[in-house]
Amino acid sequence: MFIDDAYAHLSSLCLQGLGRTSPNPNVAAAIYTSDGALISDGFHDRTHSPDHAEVVAIKKAGAKTIGATIVVSLQPCAHSSKTPACTSAIIEAGITSVIYAVKDPNPVAAGGEALLRAAGINVEYRHSPELEFIQRAWLHKILTGRPLMIWKIAATLDGKVAASDGTSQWISNEISRADVQQLRAQSDAILIGTNTALIDNPHLIPRGFTSRPVRIVVGEQEIPSSSHIFDDQARTLIIKSRSVPELMQTLTAQDFSQVLVEAGPTLGSALVASGNIDEILIYQAPKILGAGKEFISHIGISTLDDHLELELLAVQPCGSDIKAHYRVKGR
Image: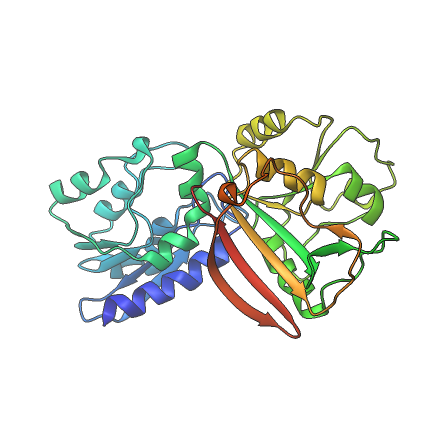
């Protein structure tokens, strides 16, 4: 079906926008002729232009927009801020049909569908779970008021992130580590604790990508000025506190949509215990240590009935490693 192919195309474009649109959603749009031929497409990319996806596609199409259909991953907005409302651009372009995949929960964007219909444009909502998932970080931020928090873990088969002597590099293999680079590039910020900064001295710049997520270090230990996180490759934010509420307040104020947590057991567990981890990505290597540092510590659970329940979203091999993606239920 036409719409299935169109949504598959938008999914690819939305993924390209991840990490490039904050504080806006990673929206994609494509314009088609009445018989389903692709005219133009585009996705929102604030690193290149303030234009929203619909405007990017309309500008590419030129006069071919007259009588065309535009397919959008998110309900077109009705409000103007730094850029005009997308509904106005669609109306002015002479587009006669709009199909969108996900409803916009933002109250300031409400009314777009009514405006389009009032202009004589046919509007159709065809829900896409896949596109909703790809745009979930921004949707989560709008619905909860805080960014989507994804905790990335590399662990052995018995759940260790470091051996008894403290060695931890490298538990996962090169394929897993390459996969993490893409995950970093798709995030607005990367969060670590001061202990991780001191022990690993990470750079946190996605290798092979142009995205430059903000590097955030939280904790009270002093970090040497010569550390990699203080280079000029990306912005670094230091939060000198061990308070989770203060950390979350800062992250919310920064208007991030997706934060990748690459912290160790102490900070990661504190975020889990406080209800601020939404998803867990674990790269499990076929190694057993028997002793060493567990990836998670005490989170206030003493009985099986109080367990933290996870929903498996996806699982895939990364060479000999296994990558498992979970959602924390109830978040």
